[in-house]
Image (cartoon, rainbow, N blue to C red):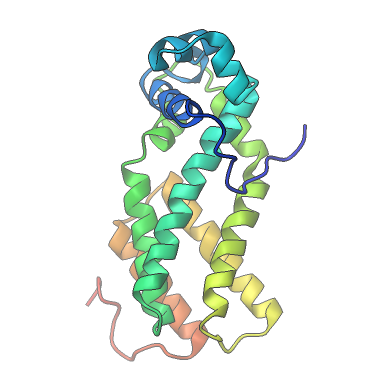
Length: 207
């Protein structure tokens, strides 16, 4: 099985995005096994052949859904960094909090994590086999944004920090241990320490 490309998916025809959206909503409502090309055709109001022409196989559909959601998360990261062009620590705080708040209300993630859709969630293995590609794309985007701040880290150090941040955020996406603000605060504090700009006062959500 080839690794999924997590670059933005082609725009495709006029029905590609409605089909992907319908697939996400149907997965959240009824589980991945309930998603069929015939059902999607019915929901979108097109022929089954149109669904195949726009998407291809069911595996390709899963990849398109995952890529669609990843791009949504990366978009909120970019927006957060744009809000803090001169403060890397605040940009990290804002980005982490935005990602976790989006994840908290993400219907596809809820469907993946839920055990209410039958005995075997077929979608989770599809996501797991592509985790490496997803992590790579997320770290690439974050690294490019962080480099604009000229952080006092060499290439190897920056690689370690990016891996730490992305993996920590992903773990909190799937199993939160605090509020988005608390998790973002903790990671911003770690980032500040690494950058040598940590304040002497307590973290904002724990003061």
